[in-house]
Length: 385
Image (cartoon, rainbow, N blue to C red; front, side, top):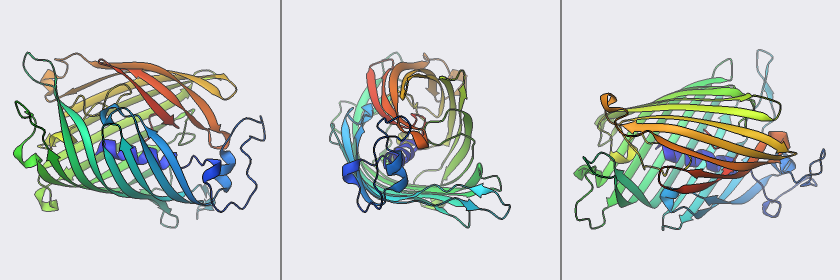
């Protein structure tokens, strides 16, 4: 679920990159050069382009084969700021409606549709997505006695529906509300000498129905590539047969992301996340380690703790260099929290300020985990939430 939410949020950001040959219905002469420094810049497209847009993007998740592509056709609707009854100006995010089709090098594919918008008078932020996928993913037995972790390649055919509705408080930096996840999956098991020890018979064909809630504070100076500010979030999901689920389980997540300018051109960032599962969730919804350089579902347990720090050095004009590193652990029992070595990753990358008026940066990260290297196409921030 967590990976699905992150994929949806990243797609929502990618759709804001409007390439010149893909815009329909322009009402203005739009320049791709910034009015201040004459550099390549897409700010005017973000502001003035309207209508139907088709945006290609690259998928670099190691768990999906390391390379793939997605086509995202979308409609955008821009909103002007509004003045609330207290006389304060409130900025409204654009409504985003669209579809998605993806295919990766390990023959995984997915199609879906999504909408992210705001009920302006009600001060409600909402997200809705639905999709179907045929995904080939690797899962690992991490707790085999006196053995190395064992890889199992599994095929998932899944239908997913997710929605979240957050009500803004009088201080719009705070919001809270319900969320819901429906996931129906059929797992195809290749012929193994031994079946995966973590797969239960009821996992082969299962239904997840989870009801939850979230509360967040977002004080970042922008939602794309922040220079300062913090974002705090706590959310939970409850799964029960009363809701039509095959599993009885809870999951709680706490996260904190902060940015601070150490000097005029050096921005420091820190991320801390913790996730805890209770009851008996399916193996594919156990908390996992989400770090650059670590494939999805590589390390899982009933508890995961992740810390990551990064530095962005604005080296020359619009170009920046990145450096980052993280430590994490996933385990089933707190009394054996660090019985195995802590997982690490580190790496470097670059960013280009592609839309100055939105402080939106784009670039590439290269990361090393305990096993291998990985690379990522980054739009905005790698910590996009």
